[in-house]
Amino acid sequence: MGEELKLFRTWSSRYALRVVHALKIKDLEYETIFEDIKNKSTSLLEYNPIHKKVPVLVHNGKPICESLVILEYIDEIWKQSPLLPQDPYEKAMARFWAKFGDDKVMPSIWSVFISQRKDQEEAIAQAAGNLKFLEEQLTGKKFFGGETIGYLDIAFGWVANLISILEEIADLKLVDAEIFPLLSAWMNNFSDHPVINECWPPRDKMVEKFKAMREPYVEKVA
Image (tube, rainbow, N blue to C red; front, side, top):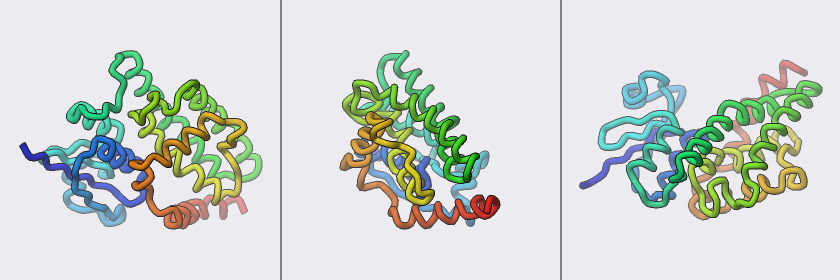
């Protein structure tokens, strides 16, 4: 039976990139529909009327929204190259840490990026504390899931790409290899994986985008 897969995304969305990575790892063919967030398509609004945002995966006409939910759906439908652990406890822990990444790690990194002076020092301390938890999860492992890329690696994929971009713009070092050797090694291993590496958005465009996003916050402090 033929499968129809469509992915609604933007060129830079770290959430949509999770879905791209999962589909590539599963070696699935799909159609990409790039959205203009300032002028959303009728299809996107119909498929995701609640949040009205990407990513949305449409499988045989049925839409699935929210990146982490989509990852689980993909793993349930296509069994090759499993993403989630089989053990119920390990599976629960993978979900826990993925939520921690979205609820705690991502906001703390963003706070470092948009703050200045003393506020930035406090933000760095908080972000470093969160990154330490990730460092501990990598003890004795190449990837969060073991020797191969899995659900949690994909969930944290933005760390491997976006942090270095934000560091460049803000002129600071958040993930120091001496302080976070395991996390630093993971970032390189994940980033350089052939399937992952070919999916990253253009770095120069990302730098330009996030510079523009940061400017209003910096101007307020100046």
